[in-house]
Length: 291
Ligand code: ADP
Ligand code: MG
Picture (cartoon, protein in one colour):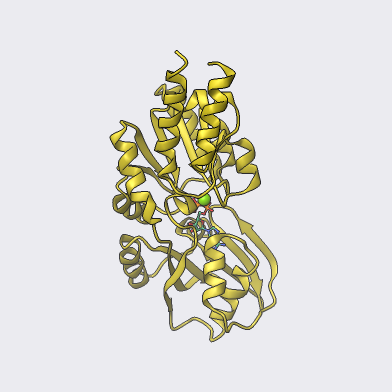
């Protein structure tokens, strides 16, 4: 590849909102056969909203205040959704607050230990979900919502369902990638049922759920080593910088973190997934003119 041709290619990409970091990235792009997409913030908007809240009879009257106060301590998109969705909440004092990545939150309020998070968090603390609430949760998850459980001491006292809409641009982008012959995967820390529902709506037939940040990097590594895939990992960097760094090509989405842009070979300024097939096409064209 001549430096001039690469410079022209990089310039053309930039006018399309595609920032290519170096020659290595533009050379890697045409070899890609597998695109791994993070769900939250990449396929979806990353700004969930509360869809449903439900408390059991044993929930204390200030349960919503406690929930909002705990979520105010976290900067996870789900936390922002819940804290903003309960605006009238009074602040409650929390001691021993813990943020457990991939699980949720823990805190002590008025002598009780509270947990806010997913099923895995409850399982870890031997908290049993009542059958009635479980049925409601299953139907909310089948509808692509994410259910967050609230437990006080050993009992579940409520649930919150949040929904993160799929970006309208994701549908065409995924269809275009599949038409180019690329294998498309969805990875998420979210639960199985919600992941399956989002994957189905978005048109992605391969997905893995309940992944911790290190699982995402290991999965990319596995595809590359065991299946000899050339993987483009696409994420906003919140949790996925290790996976971005592991991939043949890391692609950071616009409003992502600085770490993501740092480890990624390509940054898509607009968060529009349709730029990814465009970037791969442009790179192919750039390298073809040279050979
Ligand atoms: P992802 O970015 O793929 O959604 P995360 O590891 O950030 O993955 O989150 C995984 C899951 O952990 C969330 O779907 C949620 O169930 C739970 N979780 C994480 N942080 C919080 C929080 N602040 N409040 C409630 N649940 C949380
Ligand atoms: Mg994410």
